[in-house]
Image 1 (spheres, rainbow, N blue to C red):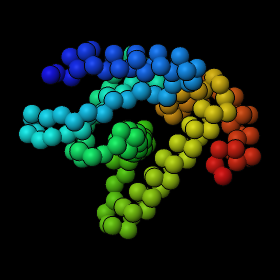
Image 2: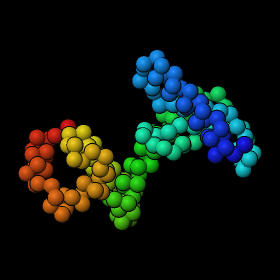
Image 3: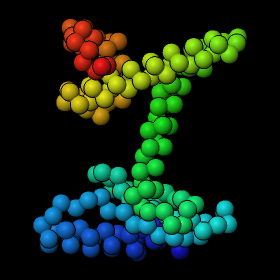
Length: 170
């Protein structure tokens, strides 16, 4: 069976049953996920498939794992951890332009790498702080925050207070 067929025939029905059960019991439903074993033809192997939705999404996402006895919670947690790592390296590469720093020996390479990683961590801390502290900045990426700082859409007094009070970088 193709994934689209499985989602339409099995996943959506089970998800509706789960949501109806939670509504009857008057409890807040947790994110619904469905773990199934399947055969991945292109890799010629058995895999564990996890079907789930992101919060508030209409699309059903599917990820797979080579481990056959892995629990759904573990697969989902690893998926989100990997996504965070990929976002961190995307910040290093695309936003902070780490590839533009040239070095001639290992010592300067390590210094420049450490400085760039530190900058990325400060940028992430700033983004997380702004997302939590200010409603207007919720769910904004660092690049969008940076553009608004550069083009004076954010008051400089607020930024100075953040730096003076160490509000986002403790």
